[in-house]
Image (cartoon, rainbow, N blue to C red; front, top):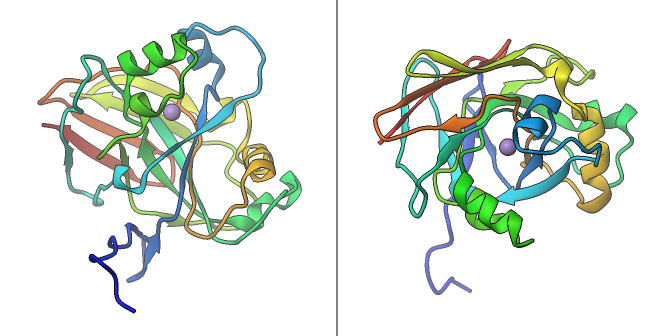
Length: 231
Ligand code: MN
């Protein structure tokens, strides 16, 4: 049997040092996973971080040594950058213990969780889902995936983002409230994880707006850098 129209193309992210690509399944994101960012968003509580999702149409591949571009998102006047470590899942698992989490990680990438902050806050105030603030086309730029070098999940390394060469976010993965292992443990209680899933693990402090013409550069130690122009 055929299809009534062409099925969507597979969303993919290149794997560094390989001719193969990582096919993307689901895109999970962690909210408020660094203390200083929690504070700048107006929260001092110790509630556990939480999850939201983006669609595959969010993915924008950023080539090594090159520049990607994204349009200024529609319906916002406060379009924010959130630099994040992205964890790429390579194995199916449900209720994964944090001690075992490393076995489920294929690799890591540098990503930006672009956010329509005005819409997100409006929805937050009304107790509504964050989708319009977080989930939109071209909202998740990502660099090539670097394969994990061993079974132990990443726990440290500088994570940073500049806008027009001015440093805006500069922190270390050590400051994650929930580590990569703990995030996988918790997320996998709610959702079975599959190869192809990506987890944007949360952003450190220093989020802020970009406008058309701005150039964001971001990186995580050992995972390369990405450059994204807003058009
Ligand atoms: Mn985020």
